[in-house]
Image (cartoon, rainbow, N blue to C red; front, top):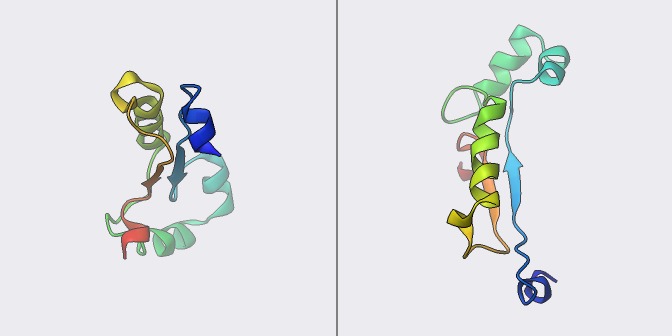
Length: 81
């Protein structure tokens, strides 16, 4: 499908975030649960909203003009294990 959209100049990419510290995640996890989840992240900490905002900004910019059909994983290395 994205091949058809590319012919129209439309790029289709997706962002796949890992654990991000937000009000929702803070309410869903107690300190022990957060520490346990963070221990599974190779970088050792959960991300912040800005850690997702910059990759999204990149995908929305002309700097990514040659990208389409890509999945951008922003998860502190979790999926790479």
